[in-house]
Image 1 (spheres, rainbow, N blue to C red):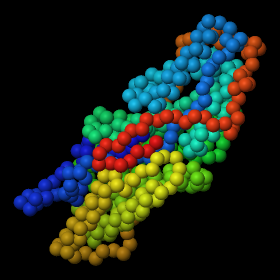
Image 2: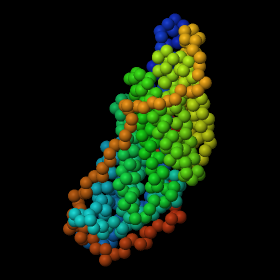
Image 3: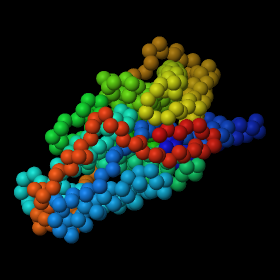
Image 4: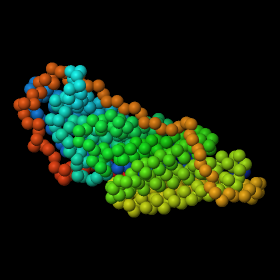
Length: 451
């Protein structure tokens, strides 16, 4: 899945001629002259693989005792297969995904919900065994004979799809404003799905989540935070495009860096062999946006005639950027889910380096000619709080129960006339064939593809 964000779509960092005859036009630090290639910036997102699953036939011979019951089983089989195909279809969009998701989930809920209005457990909930791999644990699946496990696992993939759709849209060379909104909304939608699973569905499982697996709190929390942080990256780009004041950009960047720090801390105790690469991503993005925060905070200080403090803030930005650069190399060398990438060669990364360097040089020039301020030894404390632009998960709701279901149809499923698919029970060590995700090549001027 391609994973970079072209800020050129927002018209950010407009190109300014640097010819000698035109340098009299004063530019702000955020409009530092750059090459045409560097003006085509691109954000970059790490993506873990989709979950894979075993075939489910829903063939309940002898149990489904009516044409309506058999029709439900057939539709469950075809709707599930169709939804799985959507995950790897590069032409799939959010409307198509919603239609496919609603079709399957509205039927699947007939195995979960109480159709007679009582609190009694649905008799169909435990009739079918389901096997799913994890986004971090390779091809060894977990298995549960529980329709809620299927609902959670499939929903998990839907959320992952929204993050990958956001990456695919962001990877286009010319992104429209409407497409940028799709990226932003898709990331918040994914966060909302993960949040719904954590709070409403996973607690319903009889078998508790295994440590280090997708349904464990540490992993799902990391996904929620990552989606919010990446949505805020889009917000920051938009704030720069609309030339909001440097204080707002600094505050948003600081909040985003804190999101990535929280995500890294969430995975701190997770097994390193499956989480190290993901953690490196969180660490490098944390330092990257700390560099942004210090850089724009420095602009605010300079505008307030605090040139010495501005220089110290820019020096701290330079230090954070250098640490992010080191982490880019460590990320590339670290084994784990997600293909090899070169984030330090991405234009989004190179652009920030140029911005920090040129803004620091400007502050130093101004201090040498005008202010003559002493540069503090201590870095300024970033006590920044963004009042606008913070990304919150979008509320997710399951579709209503399919009209194909009714108490009468449910009664035609007779569990006494057939086995509960015991032969389909999975062995934990059995492998499930991984999803064949599309091999999207990066646009020119970039070199990053992650699965």
